[in-house]
Picture 1: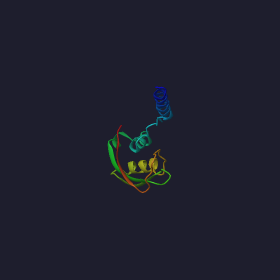
Picture 2 (picture 1 turned 90 degrees about the horizontal axis):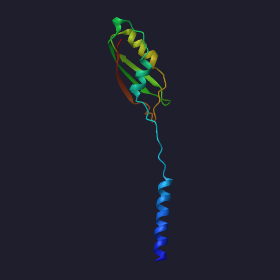
Picture 3 (picture 1 turned 90 degrees about the vertical axis):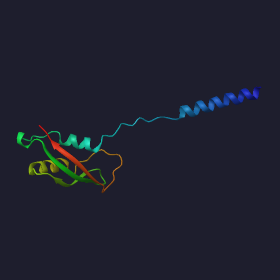
Picture 4 (picture 1 turned 135 degrees about the horizontal axis):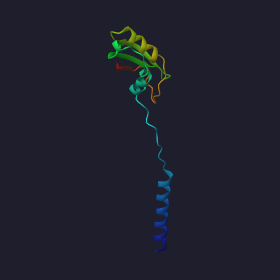
Length: 111
């Protein structure tokens, strides 16, 4: 009977110890690439006539996590210059950078 009580106490100690030994790490969710690009392009000073312009931005990321703009397909030359100046070689926060992967993001400027 004593051996059985020792086994039960030992099992309870081992299970309690293993439960307390595991820690859960809370990670902050990383913001998506498109959300970070939205923040970079949000402060603009386009005139009313240039509002509602759209563009397709093709870019890649280098090994340092910087955006390298490859092309901006739009009819507005001002929008193209604006996007390139705001995004080219700007660092974004991303956990696993896949260097050389092509990304395409639609951009729309509104008033």
